[in-house]
Image 1 (cartoon, rainbow, N blue to C red):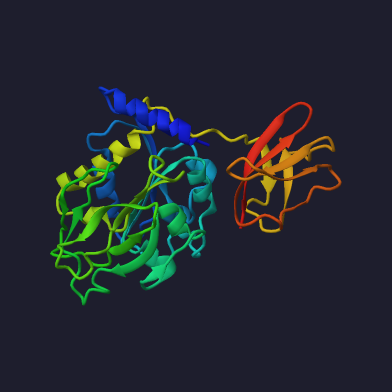
Image 2 (cartoon, rainbow, N blue to C red):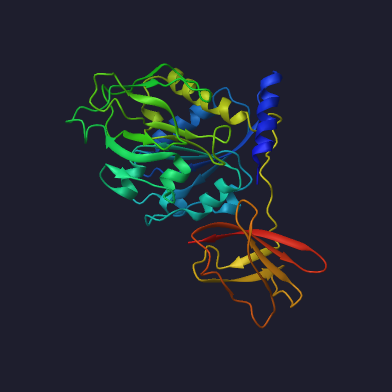
Length: 349
């Protein structure tokens, strides 16, 4: 996993040196839009305009009827997840309104997540307002404390006329974003968490929901280990291609800070060790290179801060590991035998 020191060194490098070219990005674009595919094509075209992407892999969650797995997401940086205006049964929530554990594992491993679209909060949480706290996906991974209101639904049927940029040290963009329509409906207005950084506000100031933000980010350069950018509106509906590209350019300039030489710096896990099941709630079993470990193998559980929480010896006769003493979360698992040390992650749900 990336460390704060590593991020600080990258940030300092970006401060003192000016690069002549942009780093190339290896991105995965996840289409979670089943309502109007031309909106997907519009967003993709803007992403590809004038950018030096090394790769944009297209994953169609709608056709696949599933979310990409952690292993499928792992090589790509960032994951760009697009829901358009679709607010029913999104694979962002596994199609069944649950936390996407593969996405959580990708984020905890240092990936960057860029989410955009109308109504993905409504899909899972229903009508606003909804409050979040630590342990909830929107709080921990999107940086919002409250899904506060929706344009049209909570503004007396008006819709939001525009968004205005909130100056910060992370993401630049056009001063004002307007729409292909006079106003836009079902834009989510949010209240950032203490770690959340807003970068667009509902507008104008006279608008009844102008205290809320439909664009919030978390940054490893700020006070968290998570990197995510969330647009709680559909950028396909921005009024001009120029403004859409201006918005995307500001976001991509931020993302490029973490890969100044075009190198994906997410650490690669050891796939020779597997835990079954994973995620798990009560117990799990260990396989190393597809086989049961012998009795000389020591199994150790660490939290994400590196603190040892439990330890035991493994044997073919006693493979099931009781994890009921672990709280919900993500843990580092180490299996050590006289020949080699194996490591992976365990999600406890």
